[in-house]
Length: 236
View 1 (cartoon, rainbow, N blue to C red):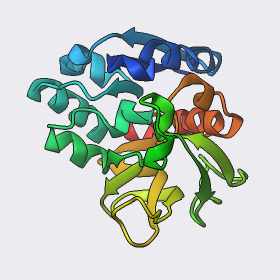
View 2: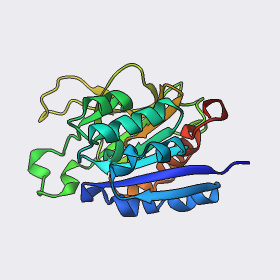
View 3: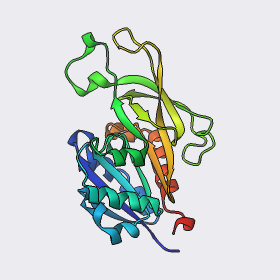
View 4: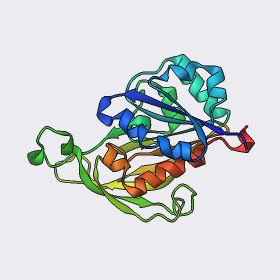
């Protein structure tokens, strides 16, 4: 059996601890037979030969910028069958100024609503709210999320702008609180997949910090997502 090749690309905003976060998953990839290459920038996306031989890209790059050549290399690889996955801002808040990247991924972080203003202390926890991640009917059957139960988190709750080409496996609902400007609850996708050409994409929005990634359900979703997104024989 031919070994699978995984490319882990990390960088961007240090607040999401891209090195510690990705290191958490390297043993899983290796234990599942992947040859893993780790890159500290998106320059590798412009390497046509490297991308053509990559079966899975795991990206953890919050904000930052991407060149047109790098984006073209990533997009072409996905269209040809390379899987693409990641979590939180490392995939859903990457390259905000690049419309073609947003088109590839299908959803973009817009906000993480915070606590009541009188409770805020000027720290990251100001944006931590207790919330539920609820699986959809599709999610209860999909290989990435089948058999998992709805669960609670107390961390950033992503509000995501998205299109309807994504397949939503789990959602989270933002209530209409008195200090917020919206007037009714808003439900956002929390986990989704997307087919793009011959490629598969999996986005998991929980994952602000390593402790969230270590949540058993979050970790299971991310690890299953890696396996599911990986290039299939039909895309080779």
